[in-house]
Length: 138
Image 1 (cartoon, one colour):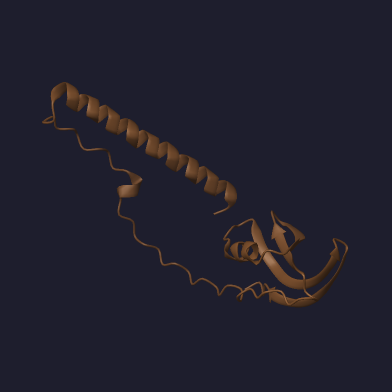
Image 2 (tube, one colour):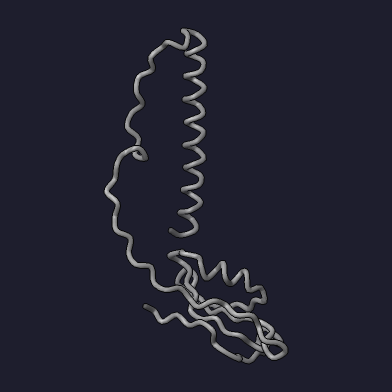
């Protein structure tokens, strides 16, 4: 699920929750008018209440290896090569936690191609020290 779909799902779940609150308020007002013995009709079948056959989950490919710390003084940044929205790009990062988060990200419009350690001097002046992850395309 891509980022836009995730936002849409969260918005719809929030709206769903609001509708359940509205139903609860209506039932509470009816109970105050006619008493607690009133028999409410059963709610219509909701898609979330239906029994679905569980689809077998495909085997998840092995993720990238654990991200190692930079070795000073030669390595002072990570260079990420990635594809976002169909376009290849790259970025320099120093925060390994951000990279760990990105490596776990499952999005249809984002994929990490490689992570390299670099000796960074400027955006157009750096040397690759070691490639620590490369997407094999499998």
